[in-house]
Amino acid sequence: MIIGIDLDGVIFNSRAPRLIFFLSKKINLSLLFSFFSRINFFRKNFYNRAIEVNQNMAWVMRKCKNKGWRVVIISGHPSSGRKEIKSWLKKYNIPYDKLCLSPNGRKPKRFKWRKILEYGCDFFIDDNWDIVKYLRKKLRHICIVYYEGYQELVSLTDKGDVV
Image 1 (tube, rainbow, N blue to C red):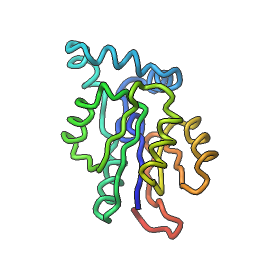
Image 2 (cartoon, rainbow, N blue to C red):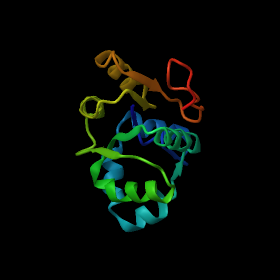
Image 3 (spheres, rainbow, N blue to C red):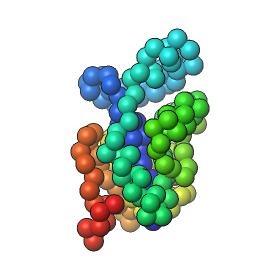
């Protein structure tokens, strides 16, 4: 089995107020954040402090890896942040096999669609309802899970297996 998981809002949560985080995803401020993340002062004093790991999702990812599943992180996050993201994943002991970041942070729907097909994901988890609807329409044979923040994912299979 191969599970694809979004990064921002699923594996990592923002410590910023939910409204700011929601707006940043809706109007795609990733390019602005990408610009600021290159500035050391901003990165040290805001960006690194604004992120926290979602322990529920980290648990799910560890369980998947323990069962021999492949874990592919597929995010519309700009690839310019790859170094920081890899260091966060290592710092928080988040297991994964592949990290796919958007080359320019634009058109995350198409980017995720292509990567899900490329890696043959059986499941994909995302917190953006617009993206989930798009993927469910395009990928009817794949289980696309809508994840609303801090909920627990107990089962991902139709047999009721705890992941």
